[in-house]
Length: 159
Image (cartoon, rainbow, N blue to C red; front, side, top):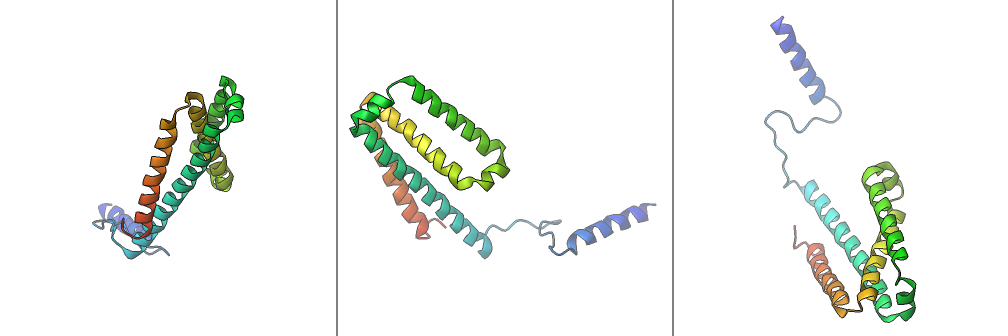
């Protein structure tokens, strides 16, 4: 009886290991993060993330600059109703991103664009409400840091 259970376990390992894709993480084998395929995938991922963050910050600076210099923007968004509406929209969008992964994967670009614009509007409302150059300066400083990190990451300095 013990022989049969050991033989069945051996057969199961054979099924796992002899399929079209061998299980690379079997007994005693460890994940090797230094493989060449893994490095290429990491480089692509890092570049994609930095470019997306750079685009988001550029949109935020443009909308923030417009809000800082536009009296009509200040009049339109001075009340709390736009802030509440944008906050609710951001909350719903965050729930969609977190919970509805299939929907998010299907419509990733439009959701990404809407999220970027809504978040930029929230920063712009903060800039227009307080009439302070400190907020706009912090956005520009953040943009400069992200541009520097993006250049560093894209020139293979990070990996």
